[in-house]
Length: 72
Image (cartoon, rainbow, N blue to C red):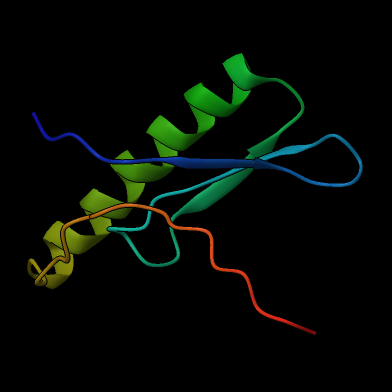
């Protein structure tokens, strides 16, 4: 069993978008959080299946998210 951090955002149309920072390119979207949860689990499983076929790669550990202000 492995645990992953999932970042969830909501776009301007109200669609939820989930991504997994530890797995580059692993993301999905849905109109509800329940559906998003099911879809991101499926995306992670598929990502790990493909990774296993290609040979395991080195992963980065998720540390956190930080907001940074810049003057524009």
